[in-house]
Length: 118
Length: 107
Image 1 (spheres, rainbow over the protein chains, first blue to last red):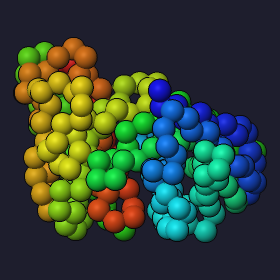
Image 2: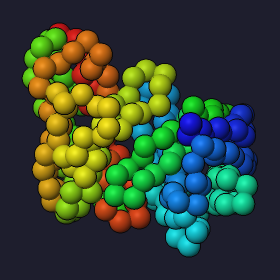
Image 3: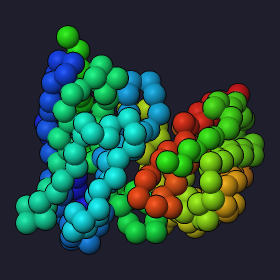
């Protein structure tokens, strides 16, 4: 069974940092590009980071470029999101998401809550 | 980056009715488009990929069409379980942009 388990969410102050982690199981991690997607309270889905299987390419939307960094440790079946210079509008549920090439996002974690507030 | 615009943002429909949601891309994305369904408090679920291919296990009342910049999701006969929010998403390059969502409510 495919499982994606996020951790690392919590409360941070504006300007602060958090590091999210996602442990994958039930599939060959190195076969899949991975993503982070967030959803602010009462709002829509926002894709925030993408990383290829070998971590050769990463991509971010303008809203987080320069502040967020996605990485992966294929030996530990783990995905990470380093979030720096956090803003109040980064408050959201953050999902770890598996991608199938040419198909889209087929498995999502349960999400971890990030709250940015003073 | 590519922008995705969905319409309408909300629609009211009756059980058994036909529903059509539109998604427009700011530039051509060929057929690199997916549709997702999300219910409150739950993670999204993939419905359609490559604009018109039905994900395994998804009922055949869901269908997708389009290419280039104009896409539609159609629910042929709305069921009670279909009341949810629907999102389109492009995946033509390295970005993975979502539309803003369409909430389907009970009429």
